[in-house]
Length: 254
Ligand SMILES: Nc1ncnc2c1ncn2[C@@H]1O[C@H](COP(=O)(O)OP(=O)(O)OP(=O)(O)O)[C@@H](O)[C@H]1O
Ligand SMILES: [Mg+2]
Image: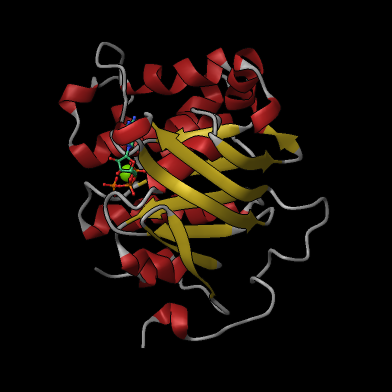
C-alpha cells in the first residue's frame, strides 16, 4: 500500500474549509496544438478544482499533458476549449496584456528546465523577477535564497552551480514573489534524494503559509506529501485521490 492510499478523507487536510471559492477551476479545459492531420490533442476536456491552500500533485506519464495543464493554469498559453478560472478570473476571457499582468501578479513558476538567465548571478536572477513584478526587494530575494539553502551562493553564476542548486535558485525566484499560486513542473526531476527533499520542504513550508501549490511530476513518491493527487493519462484526468495525513518532505523517499 502506498501512502496516498492510506485514507480517503472527505475534505483535504487543512484546505477544503477555506472561504472564497477554489483557487483553480477547470471545466472541460482542452488544448489542441495544430490543425487537421497535424493536430495534437494535448488536453481532452479536463475538469478539476484546486482549493485555496491546497497542495496538489499531478502525476502522469511523459506526454500525458501535465505541462500543458500548468501552462493553461499559469496563463502561459490559452486553452482552445472549456474554461480556466483562477482566483475568480476567467483566463479564457483575458487578452494578451491582461494575461501578462496575471502571470506577473498572481502566479509563481518553477519550470521543468530551470530558465535561469546565464549572465546574471543567482541573487540577480532572483531579484530580476521580484523587481520586475514589484513584489519583492533585495532583502526578500536574499531571504528566498537563504530559504533554499543557498545564502552563500548569491554571487555565483548559473554555470558555477550544480543542477540541483540551479533548480533551487529557480524556486527562490518564485518564492521571492510570494505568489498566491505556485506552479512547479518537475521541481525535483534533476535532483538527488537529499536535495529533492530540501526542495519539497521549501514548497511545503510555503503551502503551510497558506499558498496554493501545484506540483507536476513523474515521481509517484512525491504524491505522499500532497493533500490530493491527480493522475493524468492521454490528456485526461483519470483519477483523483485524497490523502488524509500527508507525509512531511523528510519522510519521502525514492
Ligand atoms: N507546442 C506544442 N506543439 C505541438 N504539440 C505539443 C506542444 N506542446 C506539447 N505538445 C504535445 O502535447 C502532448 C502533451 O505534452 P506535455 O508537454 O503537456 O506532456 P507532459 O505530461 O508534460 O510530458 P513530460 O512528462 O514528458 O514533460 C504531447 O503529446 C506533446 O508532444
Ligand atoms: Mg512536462
